[in-house]
Image 1 (tube, rainbow, N blue to C red):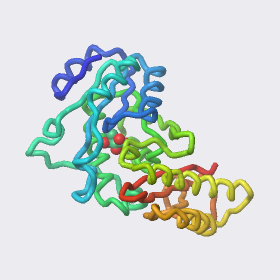
Image 2: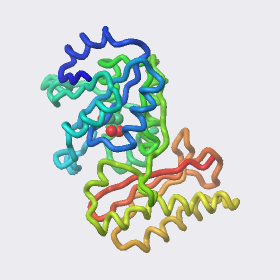
Image 3: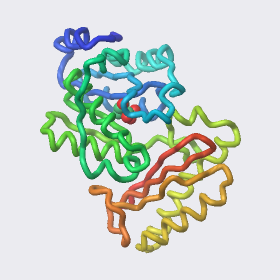
Image 4: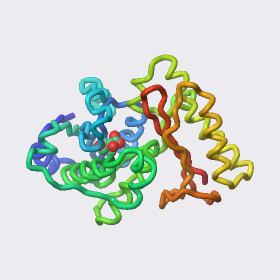
Amino acid sequence: MKVLETIAEFRRIRTTLPEPLGFVPTMGYLHEGHLSLVRRARAENASVAVSIFVNPTQFSPSEDLDSYPRDMEGDLSLLKKENVDVVFAPPADEMYPPVFSSCVEVDKLTRRLEGASRPGHFTGVTTVVTKLFNIVQPTRVYFGQKDAQQAIVIKKMVADLDMNLEVVVLPTVREEDGLALSSRNSYLNHDERQAAPVLYRALMLAQGFWSQGERDAGKLRNQMAKLIGKEPLATIDYISISDNDTLEELKEIKPPALVSLAVKIGKTRLIDNVVLE
Ligand code: PAF
């Protein structure tokens, strides 16, 4: 497995990698969720590239860029076991030299949900993902459903800008108690970890009401809020039931609908979602 830090080096190696190439972009601190993407990429492609880059432009000044968990050695050893061909792990100034002055922005979809709570976040994501796609030149790219809006925004960008690649979105990987795997789970102390599955329980509550025939999105949001309100360590940022394509909030649920939420457990902001089919 080659580990490369510069764009020039990656481009040199790229010409030697057999097609098709599967690409998994990550910010490192890898867990089973990331590895499920890597395994699928390995199964579907002749070569596999993974990037590890904690992208500063998708964090606002008040967010956790400096404390974001990092473990390059551990990540490389996991990726080696998955038979990854090449890891691209550039330093920040390789991706953003001082003269950098461009961005890629997807309108509308990015104003809702995570975009409303984290202004500028998606511009950072779509800009870095475009750069990574241009550098890596993948055939297929792999993202997790856990970041549902990110996957929807990237699919829109790929379609709008005629990027010649296939976006594959794979299911959220969960702990036994339902907590969605996330690098940020490492911030949780013991009591917060006990409290964190309340997100999943709220999603399951909504899914249960939906299965029993409830179609009033407001009622589902209220029931979810009531359940989360009982958890003293939880503070709701948003609870949303939206159209799974446009992300517009729904009054009456029509499938496929995205039930998504962002909740702070202590100081740690967690997100999760399910799709009502
Ligand atoms: O999902 C992530 O880890 C990041 O948003 C991504 C896609 C690697 C871009 O920095």
